[in-house]
Image (cartoon, rainbow, N blue to C red; front, top):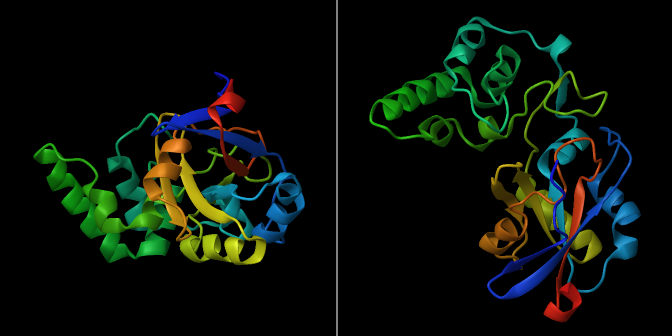
Length: 231
């Protein structure tokens, strides 16, 4: 994998990204306490905390072993209609599709499939997820995570990412964002505190400096630095 640069520029300003390594997270963990233990000791005033969405979801008990997922009739047939994409399996699996149905409801997923199909006929993409909602788009299929014991788990999206970001700030005093990022340029702040600009944090994290393999870096410290420091 190509090594990521530690710094990035946005609108003439330079930002240093510091991935923070942790142990493997579990549902027994609280993301605030993980940040306090692993990231807070190296943070400075004005720093920003970003948290990857899947590790946050794991701490909320949202990783579901495929052995515990009962695939129904709709999921068993509908997953085959999902297009292959270069950034992951997504809902192109009966197990992840079943989780989407469990999260969003059968009727909503079927409506999204119909509208998404009609959108493709006229050359428009993304209608399925616009109708199905954010949680459908955040589901990571089994085998997406290379970190045991989650290799055979479907990881649902985190609950209440906006509230979690605010909770991090209230507890630790730093602006925070919950990020959904991939290695091909997708960067979305799905929850962030009032002191952040969505377009800024998405641009600063767009090259996924934390990685999405087995780096065990669910947290990243973002720090604005002088251009001289970046040289």
